[in-house]
Every structure is written in structure tokens, then in C-alpha cells.
Image (tube, rainbow, N blue to C red; front, side, top):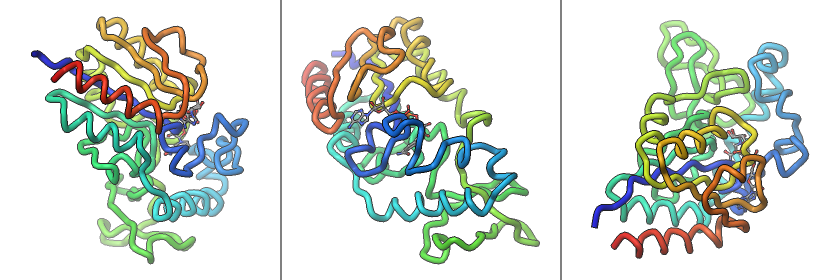
Length: 237
Ligand code: NAD
């Protein structure tokens, strides 16, 4: 049997059961901070120490959290499907640690830092990289300050060409744990619909763009996604 081309887009909700908090569920706060205070280029220009401390705490938190059943289910789906693309809005590394490979991080990653001069990213997760002290790059002759390797509000998401190519040619498009507020990610379901894909949503509650989906599964991703993955694998054996 010909297997369908599957694209999965995940958001903060898939990591909620691992203990990484979302921000829409907390009145627009992410770990007690207003998003505009920590996740914009203006915030970095105005108060880099505060933004740095916030992201260093998020980077240290990666060492304390583990992938949950939803991350593991997507790794299993990838192993069983010939044509599979995983796109995440998340900046944590729980998909990789759950066994997924070639994950497209459209909003950047916590485990890397970016040189402000050369724009090169480096994995920087040693204990000495995780203090509240400034980190300097190892690429420039005169090392310069590094910034969080995060796409902030007002910046352009990464890997958009690969993302659009995958979405516009997929046959099944699944969104997991995303409130549908952050664009362009929230609009990808429309592109999948235009391409004729079957669109499926797994979310705790109906998000603003719920009406765009063919099938809606409401509940915790850690419970519902393993069931959906079992169904997709057995349908395509
Ligand atoms: P969001 O915070 O706007 O929305 C999360 C959605 O997940 C909500 O609709 C909520 O109902 C749902 N949800 C909560 N718990 C769930 C569960 N157990 N199972 C299924 N669904 C659940 O998230 P977003 O749409 O991804 O946008 C937030 C932005 O902030 C992203 O761009 C991301 O880069 C960033 N962010 C990332 C992380 C992370 O990396 N883990 C955490 C917070 C925010």
C-alpha cells in the first residue's frame, strides 16, 4: 500500500505534560513573564540582562524535563512512515530526546546560542554555558556576545521554504498542542487544506482556528496522540 505523506506541526501544548509551561494557558504569560518583555528584539535591546536570565533559566530547565508519551508517539510514527516531516514551534529539545530526527525548529532552539556578529549557531549546553554570565562566541577572532537562538516576535521564522514545500505536498497534516495564535505557523493548516490534505488536530481545548480541521481530537496529547499514531500505522501497514 502507498503510504501517505505526513506532516506534523507541534506547539507548546505537546511539552506541557513534560512540565514545560505553555503561555496561552497562563493568560499570555510564559513562566511568569509577559511575552513582550522577554521574546522580542526590543526587549533584548532594552534589557538584555533580564532577557538573558529568562532564557538561561529555560535552557537549564531542559536538563530537568523528559519527553512524554506524545513525543515518543511521533518518533514511532516517523519510524513507520516513509515520508514524514516534523515541524515544531517549540524551542525545547524533547522531540530529539524522544527519538525524532530531522526536526524542523521554526522558532529556533534553546540548546544553541547565536553569535551576534556572524549569526552562526553553536550547541552550548555545558555547565559553564548555563550560568547567568554572558556567553561569548567561539567563531570570531575577537569573541562577541551570543544571543538566544530563538525567533522572537517580529522576526522571520526559520526554514520557511522547507516547511512550505512539505506542507504543500502532504496528504495528512496533524497539528498538536498549538493555540493557533502565532503566525505563520497557525496558517499552515490553510495551506494543507488547499493542497487537499486531510487535516487533524490534537489539542486540550478547541483553538481559534479549530474550524479549519477535518478531524478534532480534544484532550491531553500524551493520551490521544499515541492512539492516533497506532491508528495511522495500522491503517497504512
Ligand atoms: P500556546 O502556548 O499559544 O498554546 C498551547 C496550546 O496547547 C493551547 O491551545 C492549549 O490548550 C494546548 N495544550 C495545553 N496542554 C496540552 C496538552 N497536555 N495536550 C494538548 N494540548 C495542550 O503555544 P503555541 O501555539 O506553540 O505558541 C507559543 C509560542 O511560544 C511558540 O511559538 C513557541 O515557540 C513558544 N513556546 C515554546 C515552548 C516550548 O518550547 N516548550 C513553551 C512555551 C512557549
